[in-house]
Amino acid sequence: MTRSPMPLCRMALLVAGFAAAMPVAAETLQDAWQRAENASRSLKAETLRAEAAARGIEAAEAAAGPQVSASAQWQKLDREVRAVMDTSALSAAMPAPVKALFPGRIETPLTNDHPFNAEVKVTLPVYTAGRLDRLAGAAREAERATRHGVERARQDLRLDVAEAYVNVLRANEAVSVATLYLSTLEAYRRDVGNYYRRGLVSRGDVSGADVSVAEARQRLIAAREARVVACAAFNRLTGRALDASVTLTMLDLPRETRRFPELAALALQRRPELSQLQSMQAALAEEARGVKAEAMPQMGVFASYTYLDNPYLARKGVGAVGVGVKWDVFDSGLVRARAGGVERRAAALSEQRDDAATLIQLDVQRGVSQEADAAERLNVARAALESAQTWQDITLDRYHNGLANQTEVLMAAAKKADSQKNLYNARFDHALAILRLKRAIGEL
Image (tube, rainbow, N blue to C red; front, side, top):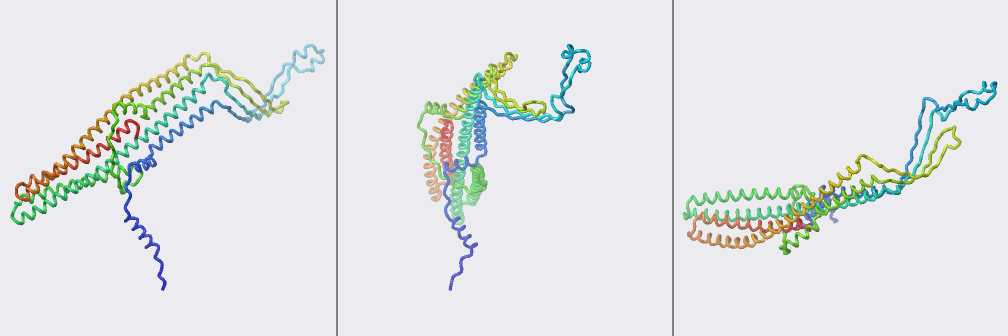
């Protein structure tokens, strides 16, 4: 007896069930950065700006090459174009009988009433006083500035993703601590209930335990909702559905051992914001030189062929070569004013860059201080958690032996929860401080 094959729908359900049962690989910060860079629209916009600037270089370089143009024109006139020639000078020496027969003027058509002409022309700039070279130089600096803008946007995006990543980890720890706190109080509530039924404690202890358990449940609810929001913010940055499941690996970042002077010097070298401002300033300086070059002589050569569809011409086509020179000897200060305006814009960028350099140094100093603060708090929080655990164990033991009251037990449980909260906050504050410091020095 042959066994019938498994239906395809049942097989698909089994495969889906196996896939769902398999553990989901935890996502690392590097994975999150890669997903965010692929999904970020702001980063794509900066990349498109860089590509547009690259086309600007091509346009500037093409302006120095030969240009070929073609034009044509057809017209319909209301009448033929005619020329009048005075013949009186020719007939003045003629005999009187002949002179009487010779007209005093002659009209002749120059073209018909529907003329057509076409022209093909090749031009090549020969001397522009450096104007085209400056134009290309400004385009290259502008393209370099946009590439620094792409790097700045990428590092900003990475910092945003890192903060969202840490917020998810922090929210997970908050839920864990709230869950453990609730479990501790629920266990304590069971003990109090047993003692009450045996007549060892009053009804007030039971009510106090109930109130504490209710407060712990409220904390857990708030922590879970905060985790939902943190995961949604992380998913938005990484290009996934807001309600997608998030599983992240824990961050373990070492302390920063470099000193502030070294970090500040690295920041001044690597921060893309400074490089972007410097390239923008250089682009404006090149543009100003190009504007000044417009006041100098401009020379080019050309070759052309013109065709005139005129029935009265012996040859309808004519070719020409030549040299053209243009020099605006006096323009009422127009070029000088334009160049001065561009130079002022370049000077403004220089001032802005110097100001940004001081802000970056301050950013590095702030990052160093925050990293040191979080590292010290982390050490203190570890010791405090050990003390809180010991205090809670002792207090519970004393309570079970009738040597401590309910207030002491609840206070010990709250202190332990607070110590756990301080510990994970210090751990994640330290991770964020390291990441922000890397962004401050341009290494993120």
